[in-house]
Image 1: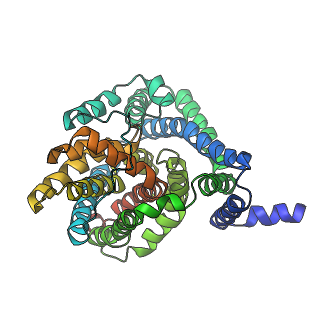
Image 2 (image 1 turned 30 degrees about the vertical axis):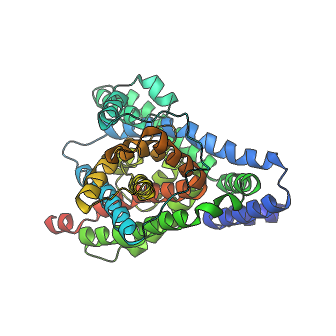
Length: 404
C-alpha cells in the first residue's frame, strides 16, 4: 500500500487526470446507476468554486499592498489582447458560417423560461453594478468584477497600514493558496466523477441530431486556439508561440474542459502562471479579470448560434451586418461570466439584431443547452487557457524587450 501511495504522489498531475478520465468513462459505461461516483465531481467543482473568490481577493489585495511604486504590470496590453482576441474569434465564427452555413431543427425544442438580457445597455448596466456590489455578496456569489474592485481598494488601503497588517494579509494569502493546492491535487477523482456523470446520464446519443452544429462549433474554437491565437502570440513575441500554446491547453484547458467553469479554473491558472515564472503582480489581477472579459469561446457560440438561426429562418446576412454582430457579441461576451446559462443567454440579444423574436431565439438557446455537453466544455477550455496564454505573451512582448 505504501508503494502505491509513493507511486501516486510521484506521478505527474496530468497523468493522474488521464487515469481519472479513463476510469470515469469505464465506470459510466459499466455501472451507470452508481450515482455516488458523480458526487466526487460535484464536490471537486464545488470546492474550487468556493475557494476561488477568497483566493482572488486575498492574493490581489496582498499584491496591491506590496506593490512597489513605478512597477510595470503590462495590464493594459493584456486587456487589449483579451478584447482583440474575443472580437477576432467572433469574426472567425462569421467567416466559418459563410463557408459552412448550418440550420437548426427547432420544432422539437421547447423554449426556456430563463430571461436573457433585453439589450446591450442592460449588459453594460449589469457590468457596472457588479463593480460596486457589496463585497461580502461579491465573494459569496463569485462576482469577480466586484471581488477585483474591492480587493484593489482594500490593497491600496493596506498599503498605508502597518507592517503587521501587511504580514497578516500575506499569511492569509499563503494559507488560502495551500488549501487550493490540496484541492487541485484531488483533480483526478473530481474529473472521474464529472466524466462519469456525463457518460452515465446523457451519453453520446443525445448529441446525434446536432452533430454538424457541434463539429462546426468545436472546429471554430480549434481554429482560434491553434491558428489565430498563435498568430497573435507570434506578432507580439516574434518567436514560436506553440510551446506556450500547448502548455496552456494541456495544463489549463484540460481541467477547464471537465470542470466547465472559468471560476473553478482560476486556481489552476494561478498555479500555472507561477510555474511559468510570470510576474505575480500581473497575473494575480489578469487571471481573474480574464475569466470575466476574455471570452473568445463565448463570442464564437453567440455568433454561430445566431447566424444558424438566421439561416434557419431564411434571413440574408451581409458581411457588414455580420461585422456589427461580431462587435455586439464581443461586447456582450464580456458580460457572459456570472450570468446563469453563460453565453447562451446572450443569443436572444444577438438574434434581436435580425428581428428574430424572443420566443424563437429561446428555442435556439434550448438547442445550445443540448449541445452544451460538448460546446460549453470546449468554450471554457478556450477561454480559461488563453487567460494564461495572453498574460504570458504580454510579459514576453518583443517590443517591450526591445525597449529594455
